[in-house]
Image 1 (tube, rainbow, N blue to C red):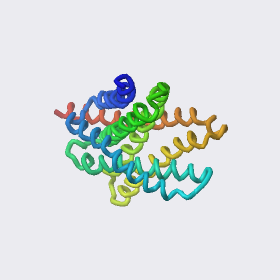
Image 2 (spheres, rainbow, N blue to C red):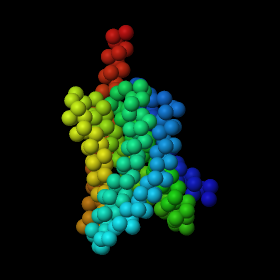
Image 3 (cartoon, rainbow, N blue to C red):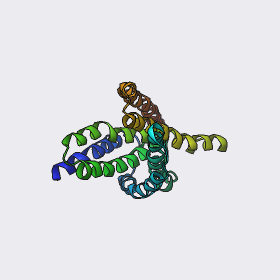
Image 4 (tube, helix red, strand yellow):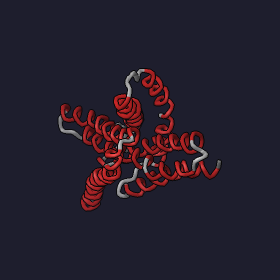
Length: 233
């Protein structure tokens, strides 16, 4: 049990640490990051309740049922509650003072969620299969983080938008785009269609490239802001 618990928790904690170290120029308060991680983990509770309700409404069959599960039950519900944590407890905090912060907080919330979800799968649901923990550590946990990076990218654009209209557009995209990516990820795995499975790895690679580019963009801004302030002093 202890080994399975370690396997389940380690990926989320490791990625959270990497994110913290990535934000090297204006690091977020550890207390706030820990709060967001824990609240992200606790967001599993309302997520399960809503997913149960939506599952009872899934009257579809075949691929439509899988699509409803992927994009609505899992994609919408999980991304909604992960984002809600950041909107309620970080978005308007004074520590959220640059665009990179949106990525950090959303990814940390997502990793909190993913860690608890991982424990549920690895320790309880599939404890007899040690490979589940390895696969989820390589695929599912990083995927949640990457959805969080996308979410944070657009949430920061919303926060620092020049007009209210532009802000509303990016605020909506901070939910819609992660839902889309999450839904595609789950649908490919759940549909078990050969040609779809053939594009799964390219999709995951594209997901990494897409989000690392966004992370790099905001990290560069953070670096430039840091040196601009230092130079002015």
